Image (cartoon, rainbow, N blue to C red; front, side, top):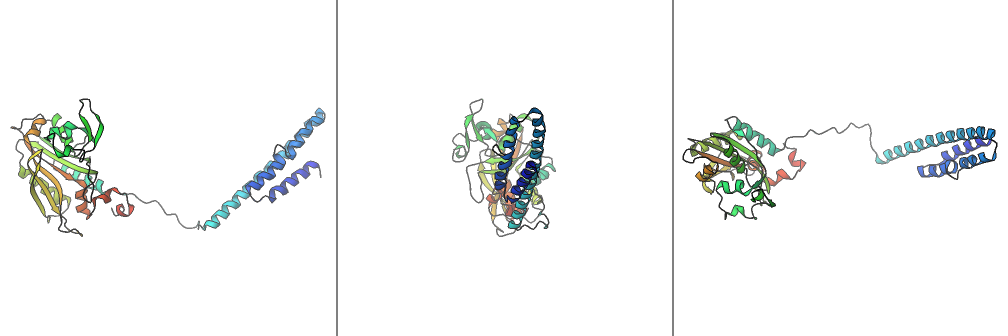
Length: 337
């Protein structure tokens, strides 16, 4: 056996004795490292004649290739053994069927918004949208809110540390009524619109959230009365809840942008809160000052407006007692829908 054959045999034995990648790296350095056997063999090339150098170099390179193949084979064997060992320690039954992919569902709030939109579109209303960051004019002043109105306070409204180009304070809209102002200011009557969207107020409890959804509706024309408001909204509730047996009440109230004004309450039809009243909307005849801010003549045009809490409609429809559940992203709750 030549010295080179003996070197290959020794490498094979050393690699087979290595039981881990770390041990194999140590064995590798003995043969392929800077101070290994092959490095020493290459250094002997300087001591032989040119003809012998060519043949000896070729032989050394062949030995190197064979040792590298032995090393690669042993490394693959160790890695495979380690993988099988980990699988056996984890006690995974790879013959079990996969868990599959869960099918998602539409969020209950989104379901309610789409249902509301479809109902009002079926009776001729357009769905409109607007910015969530508003200025003081569209959110308050144009809607007949006086400068000292409590709603303007920082305890009720999220103000931004910025102003618009007219130096008016910027804020997160507290309702979607600004969308009505923008739309009515740029479109001629008759106007029949609903404006669903996110709104923001400094409030949080079982029936309030700092961020919530509203749908505000408005009908402006020449002969639109409070009885039209009542008839439309009662019909909407009956279609929305798919029931003619609903307990609905209109209570006199006050809103700066409507006169007369009312709050609309609905009793839970079933569930643990059955019979309990929940306010679902504020409504009324649009105030003449607001009509004027639309750029319209309040002597010629009249109308009504309403604003309903989407989450509150969802609470009654699905029998939910705490509005905050809609925003907690708890799959145990959401997968019921």
